[in-house]
Length: 131
Ligand SMILES: [Ca+2]
Ligand SMILES: [Ca+2]
Ligand SMILES: [Ca+2]
Image 1 (tube, rainbow, N blue to C red):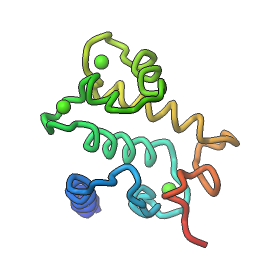
Image 2: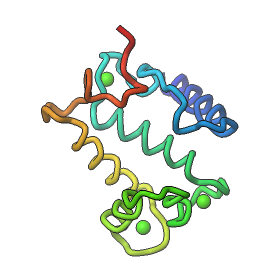
Image 3: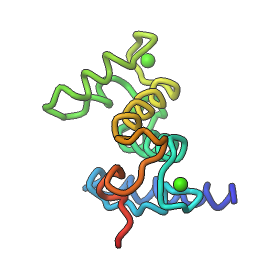
Image 4: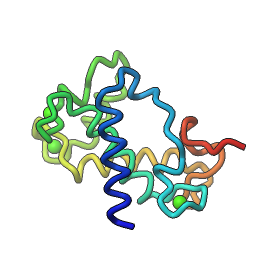
């Protein structure tokens, strides 16, 4: 099971790496929903999304997510606000702990009924199961 997850993760990363429309790629819910119950727990969401975003944003693939890489070309103030809020140690990089905090926070915002899971309309649009 662990090996299978590793393979799937590797596949996702390599396929995301060459795409031009990374952020817009439709991501099937099953990729993140590791226990297959149709909902995402905080752990499922954060592990999947933090990993995906890290690989997407680490442009020079040095395994370090710098402030410049995090901010990207976005014109909105959101990435900057997130950076200021979660760069706990005040350096110029987002480490794994900080990134996990970011996505836990985003998870909390998405979990509107506060049941600890994302389901139905709470899921990111591209992760919603087709009905
Ligand atoms: Ca699940
Ligand atoms: Ca980097
Ligand atoms: Ca930091």
